[in-house]
Length: 216
Image 1: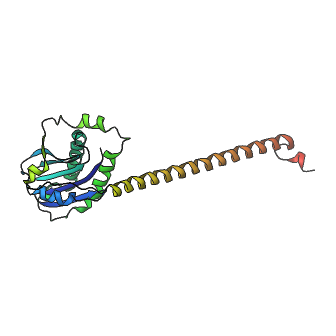
Image 2: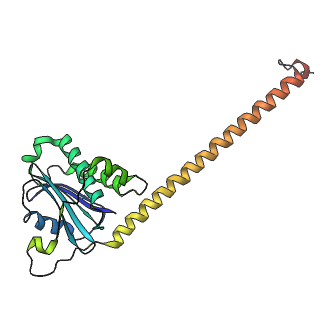
Image 3: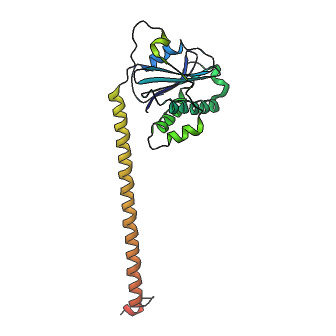
């Protein structure tokens, strides 16, 4: 379940955000912020296969966009850890910060998104340990929430997302190639060292330790 976008806001004021692709979802998010109620609650807002999951705590909205409507448990675990990191970093300063006044938190969002998007991580186990059941979280269609007459469509640049995945694969391949190269270098150096020791030992046996037998 790739998480494509993450954002922290105070009412309609976006404080920090990060995305690993392109699309119209930041604009939809701003519109969504103007419609949702501000008391503490959790909710998922869907449109086809996409879902905006958000959690409001103490007037601060923590939101993410995923491309899998069904796996809400992972999304809300992501939001919970995001909230904890944000509270630890900024505390009450979020209540008075200006728009994008905490944009440096985007780096933390990037790391957190990479963590939850990594299929190698035991995401399900982490979620089961860190988050209560989310069956009671309300799910609504985004058109109903925004009260729009026309149908709204969430657009995500798939090519950009695929390019991002291709770049990560290429980077991982390069790192693996470098690791294998240095491993071979270490093996060759070790073999050279061992051969040198063996040759030295044989010479000392034939020529005596001080090489006196071979001087003539």
